[in-house]
Length: 125
Image 1 (cartoon, one colour):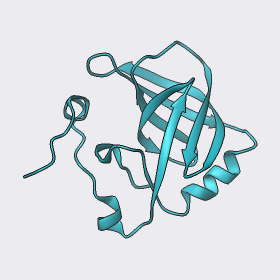
Image 2 (cartoon, helix red, strand yellow):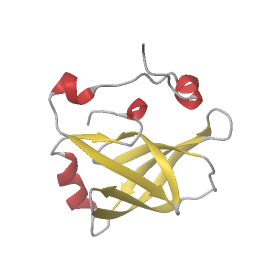
Image 3 (cartoon, rainbow, N blue to C red):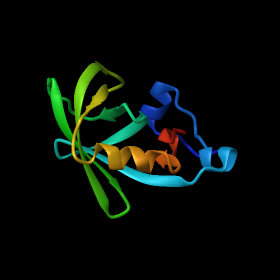
């Protein structure tokens, strides 16, 4: 029996991705916190991130924490776009701004596939 996807994943038509099995890349467990609120990663690259959050304030620059294992990368992003998706959720796209942790985070990204919590939101790099 296939796994049941949550309402938001169905709304966004996101399927269950098995990137580690398909690509053979190491999966990195990555957690995102934006202004103290947990967010789900839709995709991420060395230059930016796209995520979903339940509440969204209007901003130009925002500090974000990306946690992998016990390391927290303190990053800053400039809002490129944002839109309401589904009931009570917002999708946001950020481009990374220079911070002390940005180069270390980019090195981490080169080492494997990021897993952003819920398997419905896994994305290859």
